[in-house]
Amino acid sequence: MMTTLSSPHDRFFKAVFGRTEVAAEFLARYLPPAVAVALDWATLRAGKDSFLDPDLAQHPADLLYEVDLPGGGTGYVHILFEHKSYVESRIGLDLLRYRVRIWEQCLNAGHTGRLPPIIPVVVYHGAKAWRLSRRFADDVADVPALRECIPDCTYYLIDLSGYRDEELQGAVLLQTALLTLKYIFRDDLRERLPEILGLLRELEQSSSGLDYVITLLRYLAQGPSTERLNADELRRVATAVLSNEGELMTTIAEQWVQEGIEKGIPMGIEKGILVGESLLLRRLLTRRFGPVPGWVEAKLAVAEPAQLETWGERVLDAPSLEGVFAQP
Image (cartoon, rainbow, N blue to C red; front, side, top):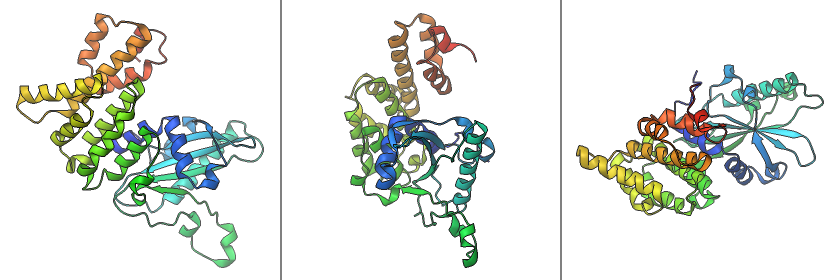
């Protein structure tokens, strides 16, 4: 059973759709209109992690959101991300288990009255078409006299391969993520990548925008795209499209070039992204706490990706600069 974000697909999906504003726009756009208007997306907020039972955590990229109902009360949106090249045959049963556990947790937390609605959403970008029924009842033997005893438990499927590019719309973060997920398993990724990355020009050179650029490049460098797009090709496309788009991309591009000159090999994208992450964290620290002292510069210079990620998560909430770098 997989319980950690070991897959680059899972990490990318959670990094993007874990942003409340991206998830709200995505759900409002791609759920059926009648469902979308029944929920107040402006109130979307992350649900409690405890609602996703570790014993059922076969899908570590799951996201659980709470959302208010227009007439009062609260519902839940459970987003399940599937990226396999095959379709999970028992996904209806998995989703039913999740719903029961969420309702049980609600009752344990003191909920009274009728149980809140749960909207299960499956986001799929695998190589094969999704041909399963979306009704759990279709997984159960059909005995006409017993049909009313079987829960229907329909889920909503968003299969990105079934959308034309012009249908994958939204703000820059959402649109580029959807297009990248759509093409990551496809042989024409190389041809589509300049247009996808070109959309990033619309991002302001803000910390949030720069963070997303790094997230997207890291996914492309680590995912199955490497079978269709090697590191040198990715560096060349990203540098050509983005190197004039601000300090971060210029630094990444320069690092790629320097790596190639020093080692005589195709420029290393991972090193360039690591430098970009360090630059972004330094910028966040300066904005929050003022000019960074030498001991911070020294830590940033030798930090591994996991350390930069941990410090980046702390920078918005830590009470002091020392708190960002404190040992857990």
